[in-house]
Image (cartoon, rainbow, N blue to C red):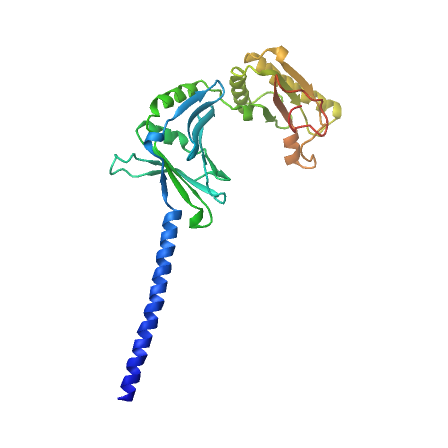
Length: 319
């Protein structure tokens, strides 16, 4: 009887403490799940607050939506055929370092699944930029889809998802598309500094170089602020100094002649030859020599100055 009573006491004690442990574990689990759910919650921007706007010039097309409560969202194109989407969210977690962009059906389109546009993003302090497959997202938006993006970090608490409606976007989107069609083939960021590399002994321009110059000309045709085109020829150190100076000038003149054929005013072009001076790589090997055989093209706008050529500023900014 004594043994039986001791067993009953032990079982009661065990059950009581076990239930207490389970209760605590359950409470912690609920707390964790509640926290995880809140950290991964979907932020839905109200439809009645959405108003997409178009703004554009000959050099840039913007399709944007600014909301003081949520942030800034916009599509931008600065060259024909290239679009990126950028989102700067108010109060975004600064630890986020990854992003996913999705095309998602409007709520009334039941049965359709979201589509991942890209998971390649540039993220900096809560601002995300996507440049892959954005054209496809715009096509989906033209068909009625909305956009959604997620910014994530190392833990669930760093994750935020936003659903952005695209209602009332179509008039602005049409103007954005019209603007796109008249953009140059390269942006100012690309056009302002170009380097054409040459093979050993090459003087005439190849097909890729001609294509690059044609794209540059498309930019010059739409930017009235550019008033000078600097063309500088360089060579490696193979051969004599006089020979290298001569071939660097021949290459630079070839480029200048092609730009003139494309319609650039010769008075706007300034040609300089430097021979083997100002190398940007070691001439001790073939790889370095290949980098030094080059012609650079630089745009100077009316609000910029042309600096004299020195070893310090060569190939660094405007010269």
